[in-house]
Length: 446
Image 1 (cartoon, rainbow, N blue to C red):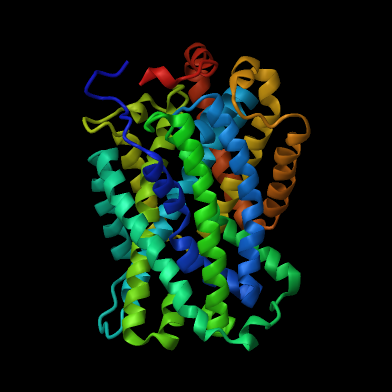
Image 2 (spheres, rainbow, N blue to C red):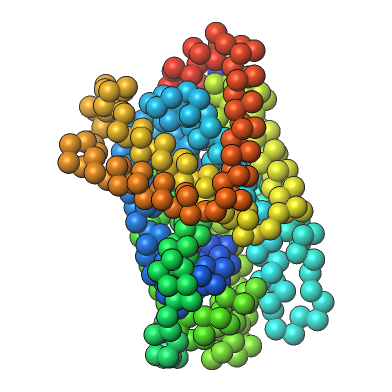
């Protein structure tokens, strides 16, 4: 048991969990990846967003049910899969989700600098790589000082960002062009589906509220509301902003821009409008970045509690933060900033999320048999005819996983292979201890 002054701290209410959950998914998702998806879906990008919401709603239902069974740190990513499905598959789920958070940390850091460079009249452009590393270090320091500091900054950024995006949508409405709205998708329905498979990235963090189960006040209520609002708020903002954006300017211009929403704003709002949307983009991107570092560290922490990974990653600093887990999370993000491309990283991240979502749905289907006592006490159950939700979630997630393409799947397989080495080496070196810990529910350990 950790000493009294070094423990996880219950600081998060419904607003904070919603801000972290929805904040993770609104950032590079809406301000950068929307432009990439438009290359495939064109003016029908908003339909891709609507399609992408379907598997997210399904996995949200499954995650809420599991959280109501047992709120725990690292629950959705690692604890539920290992205790309900299979130790090995569950470990890979946690391992996959850790990378799935590190990738967005790198993407949002670079995206922030791209939007800084989009400021009108800026003569000297910032180096995207160096700037991205600096952003990562600043938010590493914020995260190091505790969940309370993270919560305050997250709430402020989130509220400003939601208000700003709603204002952007309403200001665009008088400038919609029917010619742009009715333009066909450049690649037909296949392009819309490909767009949806990419835009899963923009939704991919909503279930991660369940990984903060031990830092939430009244976790069953708080996490459930956080996930629910985390679906509704991004879906409205994504579909609405994508629709108006590709209706104000041709989708080709939107897709070709490094800062597509700023390009739209420049069409009718002038320099002031561009600065306005850039500031909103800053808030959105930093909201994502802050939350991704927070949850990424908790996932590594949760995945290390059973001693498969080194015990050092379960160390908690004096501010109640998994310090070593946070250090490694930020360090790998810096590596990706230096070496990765946004679209490839996004596709790998989506593949990791989809693998985790498949495991989450399987856990819901297996819970009545493998954890009957906890399942029977849960106030919400997806059994009987309701089991159609996790079954449909598995089918849609598998289809979208295949659509990520061979390169993303290859890199994802390499990452899971590396995780497999860690699992088998870590487990064999201390088999008796690991086997005992991995069969227990770990909430009271820290």
